[in-house]
Length: 249
Ligand SMILES: C[S@@+](CC[C@H](N)C(=O)[O-])C[C@H]1O[C@@H](n2cnc3c(N)ncnc32)[C@H](O)[C@@H]1O
Image 1: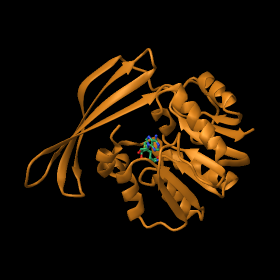
Image 2: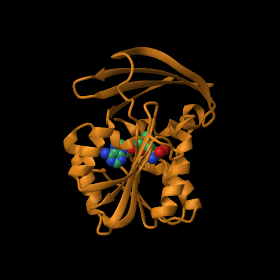
Image 3: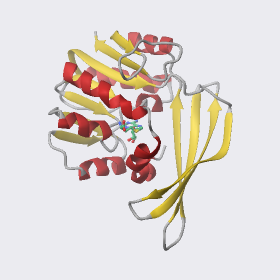
């Protein structure tokens, strides 16, 4: 996964195409108010959620393993923020937190059970007694055909340098390991100058509700709530996001 190459497009593309996901901010604000401070954010990226929680006067310790995403966050010059470039299953800090969270299905970037267990055990070690972990999971990763051939997604003006960006997407689903592998292609055509292509590979693992229940149980978390949307609605067959709130046992 090459988040470093994608970083320049992340905030811009999010505003352009991610309509439903932007509703997630409501639940992160509500959970941070209920369980913070101190807050550990994993996979913070360029700080889409971080910056909103800081506006609510929270103190955040934010971790991500993409230097380019973190550079964008650093450039926002936010107060009450500590930043670390590290990997969610292996980061080590000599302090503990009341509340940890992972937004935007980012936990599903861990593609093996082993990495997921290592990560949850690591977060467990970094929570105070009775501390809370929350994450949103997309339960529909492996829906659809096995293969999507290269398909035009959008063409839009990229205001950062007045170029035009055309994005093509494709994917294949590994049904054995329940992983979807996307390859997105960004064709950037500047007003004057050479066109440039950036390839972004992202893979996510399917995580059903029963799978997550077993995983949390194995890693000594008890489930406090499972919500079926970002407004804390009930889980239903139609839920497109599941928000797990679990407590350290
Ligand atoms: C979808 S973005 C989410 C960014 C932000 N949390 C949001 O909601 O907009 C996923 C982020 O996870 C980070 N990431 C991927 N694997 C990681 C890992 N193993 N450890 C830490 N960060 C990781 C990427 O660098 C990227 O910034």
